[in-house]
Length: 463
Image (cartoon, rainbow, N blue to C red; front, side, top):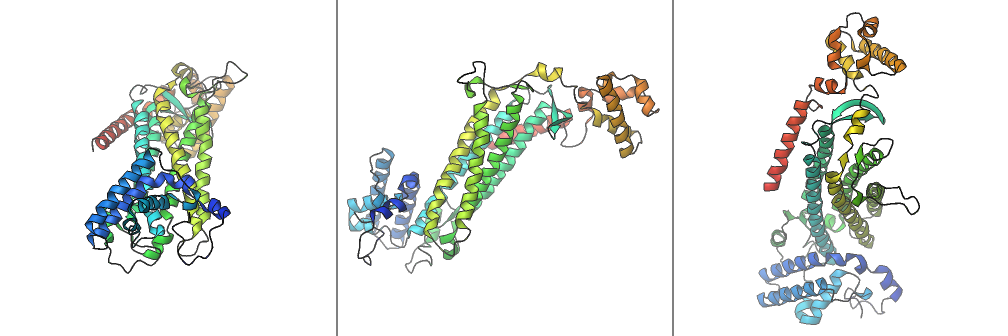
């Protein structure tokens, strides 16, 4: 059967090799629900403006609903010669309704049809991603109360830097995923415009109502320029960027916990349900979920590059190259959704190895900066205090003791004005308690942030 897209201008059949080369049904069949929804909205509009009768609309609507159920049940065979899901649905409609089915494509091109279907699909996918991000935020937030008394070493350059409360660490990821959710929402706003009615490239001479179809499909408004709409894939590139940033955050978290789960760190025990073993080493419990998260993030970022390269040299307006936008788009959403689905239970079910963390907490002189700022509060210039504390740390290192174990005479040999009150800021617990700035790891600040996020997420859940 020849493709319905081939008009009477063609004098020869399509080469079967081209049919196989040009098909997209192998990957765009997942758009069928959105295509049927968009087609019903389009048919209803055609009826409203008088281009088809109300009876014809009812016939089209009922037949499309039946076709959707058949596809859902796996009863529709897909054929390369029909190219894509849009032609499959239209051909099935024509086989049922004849000329009534042939009227559906009035004032519509596959260009605006595909764009609309894809926008509907992306909008739904963004909503799924947002829900998964919210669940991951809840997972991190759920750890804050139980871990409030636990102090972790924070790192810069992968070297121990300063002590932080464990909930301060958990909230760092809550903040990252909050920004991701903001980007999802902002991206969704630009996705949420209706392409239907721009037809191939210039619009249509037929008296359609684009506002009606936009409203019926839940879009904010119809797109404003037919030429731009026919070529626009910005919303896909932006979606891929948003997903790449989420994947980047997940990859960094995965790398961190991979390190934490090693014998060398021994900070965390991962749930064994999310780990695998070795084919030869019986003792191994490998963090495969985290490693795959780290690895799959590369695919998501690569898909962004693919989409950008796909459109970078395309002249206005539609070009068949754009058919290739869906595999990287679908893969990015599928991959990020899978990553998020596994991340939340891992966060909830992992356990901090508190004893091991506490045993080594005073290694690395995490309180050195707090000591420096104690000197600054007593009137010493920052650079002077910075140099002196470095010298004091050097002496503690030579004795292989923490700063809190140095006798007062050592401190006074570097700065005679130091008195016994210096011990009030030494040690990781005292150092944490000394913080006071907004957004810091100060216990009262962390408590306030935990409560803020608990309220914010509970409010969002109720909305």
